[in-house]
Length: 591
Image (cartoon, rainbow, N blue to C red; front, side, top):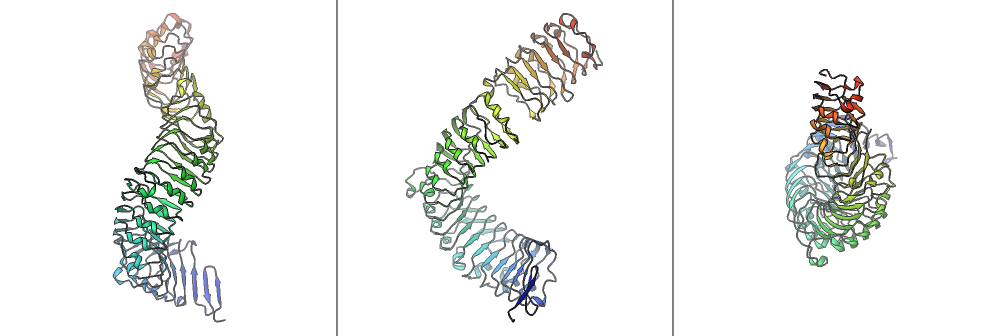
């Protein structure tokens, strides 16, 4: 019975009643650890109090728990310096203080920790150079070292492989480490995860990293490395995650990678990396074509090549990636037609090919991707009809700034019941469109003020929305316009003088609104709209006289200018004699 144990929630005791394990993670514990030490803990081996709400400092007398093998106080609100006395725990294997507010310990007083396998000090507030006590451990047992999300700076030590030769996880991301990546890291032959991202490292990617044969994750993004991708990375046959975006990589591909003369994605890379899941090379200076060998990476989930200089067409083989969720090829120089085979990538939920030189019709298969939540085709040369989509819940669609979409394409968007963002700007939808009715919706913002766009549109209904800004100048070139209704919005300013000359065929002009803020006077040349049959300017803030030229409107049979600030005489004669209802002039105190 000497080895018997008993336990209750979170606490395991031996036969004598001494606590052997204290495991209370995620239990909402509050308070401090000031009175934590107890004689009942003299044989304790594990303390797990992570993910709670503990505050205050870590008591140094925890170092008296000489049988302790695991100490996890991560994800609390602990403050102060890390007690150097904790390094005297002779049997400690797992030491995790991550995600607190701890500061620099007295490194000079740290003792070697010969049994330590896992050390996690991530997401705290220490600063200075790489902690010397780690280098003093001379620990062949350490497997994992996480110093990420701190304020460490200075160079990475060359001697790390000698001190911790069996390291499997080295996570130093989000600090201020500078200098070059030590070539000596290649001697960490057990390394599986290497994360050096978001530092100030320079000097290129060491070719020796390709010798770490078991590497599964290599993250070096957001540094200023420069140089090229070493040919040796193609030897990392177990690599699952590679992220080198925002690293200023330029130069040429070494001849060993296919004898290419300009930088591109190494063909051999995708041939060899069959387990690759994440490939992010965004925002660099890569050029050349996207290799069809990309289809060899069947496990690929995320592919980002945006912000480079890739040319040529999109490989049809992209459609054969069954697990691909995100495909971002935006901001390159890709050309040709979009392959219909992309519609075979049925797991795709984010697709961005904006700002390229793609042309032709958009394949109908793109609109068959039923789980797509973001689609951006803007800034290309697409033409033709946008097809109906099988994905009625697509929330974000951008097709702005293309060559020539046909007007009937607009009906496709009416089926998107969860649409939150639709960008159709700078297209030619109205090249053949003659009637557009967007009334009684919740559209907001300004109507285009561009005067460089001509349209054959005859009927435009934008009433009962939340449009703001001045009278839309884009209408200046709508010379075929017969019906214009922009009432019940929040449009302000004056009715433009050019309306009589620019829209000579107008028969119906509706500017009525109790929310409109149209002011100024009725244009002098309102009488130039000789075909006008219906004019409603009511419920605005128009002032000044009713222009005599209004009596020239021989076809006018409906008039309402009530509820303004008009003054002076009411014109008479011609067609106005038939409009004798006084209510059409009411609530103008100056008339």
